[in-house]
Length: 114
Length: 116
Image: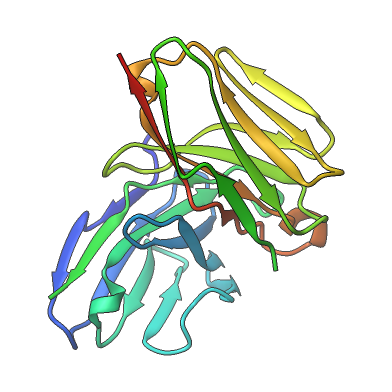
């Protein structure tokens, strides 16, 4: 019974490059949330997606960041033209349905921008 | 939007003592309050949660209390052990009540250190 999977676990990018972070929800879960955690801080909501739909992107920066959750395959958080301030741990969480409180987190992707 | 404050930021207790972490929230519509434990470099793990129709919930050495009038909730850990050392985050959401996404708003975390 695999939990939420994220890859890569660690990602190093130079300033200006693109970063792609992947999240596979738990089996049977069709709702994905992305959160960002800066060093020594709490988690901040970024975006909530269902299959093929962005439901709430109120936490996403207006530029350079995008997310998708296609019908087949993992959810992807994409950061274009990364800057040093993007260095953080990015966690995704999944839940089984819309009317569900519980969110289960993946192991995170630690992005380092050099 | 929701704002969650958490205190203290660090807490050191001796093994066997109790630890209490407190959170306050701003949105009176919030109705679900989970607590997560995060060990260094690991994922946040849900350890206990409480819904707004309940005042207290207990699971072995862990308990959570909720005061909706005062808009605060607390985590209580009794008989602490070294493996309880971690960062603990409280969170709140009103999404389900409002019919919107149940995104979590997190507190800033409490680093708990249990010493021998």
